[in-house]
Length: 224
Image (cartoon, rainbow, N blue to C red; front, side, top):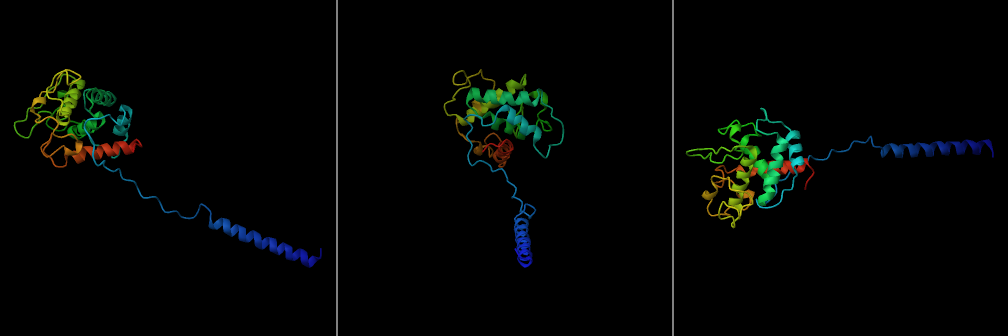
C-alpha cells in the first residue's frame, strides 16, 4: 500500500470515529429529561360502607406513621396505633364493614388521635358518637376495642337495611352502640360518599375528608 493511500485511510477512520462519538453524545443519558408530573391520589368515586377492607392493619399503620406532612401534637389514644388499626380491621371484618375506611373516619374525628376536641382520649370514643351539635353527650366506652366496635356497629346501622335491631343476630357481636336505634331507616346511607349533611355529621365536607385520607393511604401503599 502506498503512503498516500495509508494517509487517506487513516483520515477516513478518524472521521468515522468522530461521527460515531457525536452520535453517542447526542443520545447519551446526560441530555435533559423532563420530570414526570407528580401523581395526585384520586378519591374513589363510590365507596361502600359494607364490604371487605382493602388495606391491612400493617398498611394502615405504615400510612399513619409515614404520611407527610405530620400533624401537630402527640398521639394520645389509650392503645398504640398498631393495636388500634388491628381493632378496626378485625371488628370491621366481623360485621362486614370496611374497617380501613372507618379508621380514616376516626383520624378525621379525633384529629389524628390527638383528641383536641370535645371528646377526650379517655372516652375511647373515636367517632364522636353522641357528640351532637345540640345537647352533646359523648358516649364513654370502657376500652378501645369496645369503642371501635360501637363505631362499626353504628356504621352498619347506616349502611345495612337488614340490621334492624342491635342484637345478635343480625350483629355478630353483642350490641355496644348506644345510638344504634336512632338511625332510621336502617340502611339509609350505604356508601361513605353519603356521610355528612346530616348522616353521622352535619358538615358537607365530611365524606370528602374521610375519602381523601383513604385515597392517600391507598396511594401510599401502592394500592390501586
